[in-house]
Amino acid sequence: MDNYNSMLSLLSTGEALERLKTLYGNREEELKRQVTRYAELVKKHEELFHSSGRILMVSAPGRIEIAGNHTDHNNGKVLAAAVSLDCLAAVSPRQDMKVRVYSEGFSPVEMDLTDTSVREADKGTSASLIRGVAAGMKENGMKIGGFDAVVTSDVVTGSGLSSSAAYEVMIAQILDALYNGRTLDPILRARIAQYAENVHFGKPSGLMDQMASSVGGMVTIDFKDDPRVEGLPFRFSNSGYDIVVVNTGSSHDNLTDEYASIRIEMNEVAAFFGKSVLRQVEPGDVWQNLKALSERLGERPVLRAIHYFNENERVGKLVDDVKNNDVERVLEGMIASGDSSQKLLQNVYVVGRSQPMTLALTLAESMLKGKGAWRVHGGGFAGTTLNVVPRDMTEEFTRRMNAVFGDHACFILDVRPEGGTVALESREM
Image: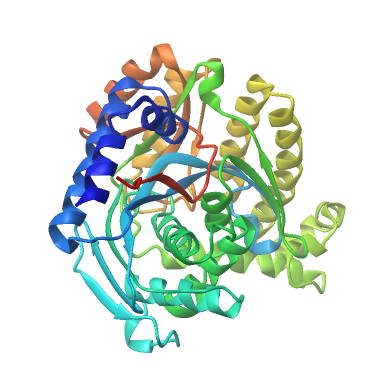
């Protein structure tokens, strides 16, 4: 009881408010929501577990993609950022290897970490992610143990903000904070999270999502050989902008072939030159062989390859713009990246299906041209668009988007400077 009271008391302090500002931004209404959200999670933990141990609030963010659309799978470059939507747990340690997790909107998970081997029957479940993260930490010489957790998430599944990566990074942060003295390197944490998703969960994801969630802030990754990661301290809010993600309500169902075709076609162009990925191909070779490539493969693979090379160059320039805090050039680069995705990569709509994303981008352009930025977000074909909106336009922008795509279609975000972290911890009373 003392630990619960300690945490609830802490939430009313200026110290906690400053901590929440770091993670969620300065908007007053959002800070009030977070205080309520944290308190409700602590009370739910007390109701379910009655723990006598310390209580930790562990958070891991979702992510957005600034540029580098569909380049990572061909060893390209990306620019991504952690954002102020997160997966949040109220957690306490156990004295055994048992794990109990109650996640809002999902069935409870109860398991034992004594055995962390892959279980085919659990693939595709949150239990497989927990076991996979624990296995990855063991394999890297770290300690693991049991815990009780209540979890809630603002990183909505299917939003394009990488809910699974946030969950994996959160679990790794829990085990690190409880049993390893918070010594786990963020880059290794991302690799462990990817391992859990690839091997235990059974989804062949890249590393970008986990890396952005784990490292925090804006992050650039070069996948040429062993991925090189650089964190960049940059927030749009410092220059008077809000990030607004618009959920168009379009479904990712039955789009697996569309997503797969991008990688397949890029690899076909690489194979034309005897290479396995486009990063091994010289851009000039593609331009010099346009006719032969088009005749053998068709025009779309060639256009997608050109997008790939342009994006790699664009990310390099954007990293310099970010380092120079040149917001106008960052916005121009984002627009150019989105334009390339729409015209060359062609991942905004599917022929014969509805086109809400195209409508959302068109509406955004009509409002933001010369003032902000807009682009397709993430994998594309369905889901969300990413917009950078001047703060004095945010209310009008969200109102008009919500009028078309439904109430609460818009998420107002900020770049979050921290990745997976212990947000708050109960004090001894």
